[in-house]
Image (cartoon, each protein chain N blue to C red):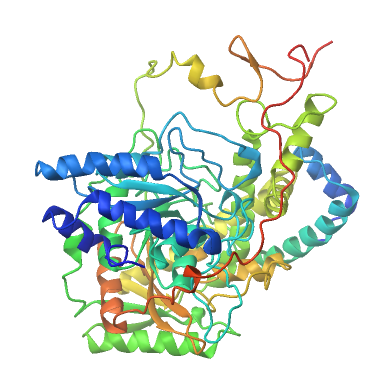
Length: 516
Length: 95
C-alpha cells in the first residue's frame, strides 16, 4: 500500500486539482498494487491496465489545462455485473463466455463522463447470487482481513465481494457495486468499507446484468462516507433508457455531510434484536445508539412488525424475477453455447454447463413459484407481504428521520463455512434485505472491530430519496468510530491461497455445422 | 412443502436446465427446505393488501412511437456463437 493508494477519493481529487500529483502516477500506483495483491486476493477478474493508462492520460491533459472534470484521474474498479464497452463482462458466470458488450452501462458511462479511470472488472458472486463471493465462476475473492493470529482465508461477503476487497486493500480508490438483498452493504461491513445502496430508481439499471429487476440497485463502495457521497452523485441520474429510474435532480450529497445530527430522530427497531445475534454486534449497536444520543439526536424505539417475513418473501420474489431474467441465456445471441441433439437439448446443455449450482437452485425455485397454479400463492403473496413491510417503514418514518441497525449478524466467516447450507447463507442478509424489499436507501459504515479484530458495520436506513440524511448520519458514525485501521498487507508476500483449479471450459464458438 | 424428484425434473425442463440424477436428488432436498422455510408467509394476514408495485408513486414515462436506434447489424451479431449473413444459427427446428 503506497502513499498514493492510501489516499481517500476526496484527497486524491483535491491533490490532482492542485497538480500535486498526476492521474498517471495515481493510476500506475494502483496498477502496481493490483499486480502485487491480486494473486492472493483475486479481487479483480480482469484488470484493464492499458485502458486505465489511456484514461489517465486524457485526465492529465484536461487537468493540465485547468479543465478537470469532477472525478478526473480517479482510478476505480467496476463490478463485473456492469456492461463495459469492448471489455469482457460476464457477471462472473461461465454462461456469458467472452461476452464483450457493444454498449456501456449508464452508471459507468456517467463515471467516465465525470473523468474517472477504470482499473478493471471486479469479482462477484455469479449473477450477484450469493453473500460470500464463493459462487463466482472465477474462484472466490479473499477478504484482505484475517482474524488476529490466524491465516485462515475469510470471505469478503457478497455479492460485491471483489469491489469491497479491492477498496479495503487499497487496490482502487472506490468501486461500483450492486445491491439486490444486501450485496453492497454486507461486503462493506465485512471488509471495513462504506457501502451505500441508494433508493430504488436513483441509479439507472440500464446495462447492468439483471438479477431481480424490482430490487436491483447500483451504488458505490468506498473507504469514507465523503467518498461514497462523491461517487453516488456521479453514478446517479435519470435515464430515459430505464423506465424505473427516478426523474428527480441529483443533489450534491457532499454538501449534506457538514450538517449536524442534533435534533434528528433516530429509530431503533426492536424486531432487529433477533435470537442468536452475537453479543459483540449487540454491543456495537448500543455503542452506536450512544454516539447519536451524545450528538443530540433523539433515540426512539420503533416497531417494524413484518421484519421476520422479509427474508422468506425475498426468496420468492428474487428467484422468481431471476428465473425470468435469466431465460435470455440460451446460447443463441451471445455468450457460451454447448451443442445438443436438437434445439431444446442445446438450450438445456448450454444452461446446465453455463450456470453454477446456486444460480440453478434459484432459477428452479423461481420457475417453481411462477409455475401454473402457484403464482398467486407465492409471488403475489410475497409482493403483498412487501407492501406490509413498506407500510411498516412508512409508519416509522412518520416519527423518525432515519433508522439505526446492525449491517450483518456476524463478522466475516471462513471460506467454505456456510456454503453447504443455502438457508444459513441467506440469513446473512437478514438486516439488509428489508431495505431492498421497501426500496429504501441504506448505508453500511465501519463502526468497530470484533474480538478477533475483524471489521463490523452499522447500518443507517432512510426515507425514499433521502440519501442526504443517510449520509449525514453515517458521517457521525465514522467520526465517532475514529480512524478505522487498514488491514495488514499480508498479501504482499503471500502465495495464492488456493491453487486455481481448471474449470471445464464451456466452448464459446460452437462447432455445429452451419447447416444444422 | 415437499417436492418430489418428478417435480424437480418437470421444473428443470420448464427452466431448460438439464439435471443429472445426482443433481436432481440434492435439488429435491434443497428446494423442499427452501419452500418449507418460505411457508411461514402463510402466517401473515394479507387480506385486502395490494401487491407492491413501486417505491414511490410515479407515472410510467411514455415517448413518441418512433425508431430511435438501429442500423447496427454487425454489432447485434458480434457476440453470437454462430451466425450466417446476420442470422443467428440454431440447430434445425422444422423438418
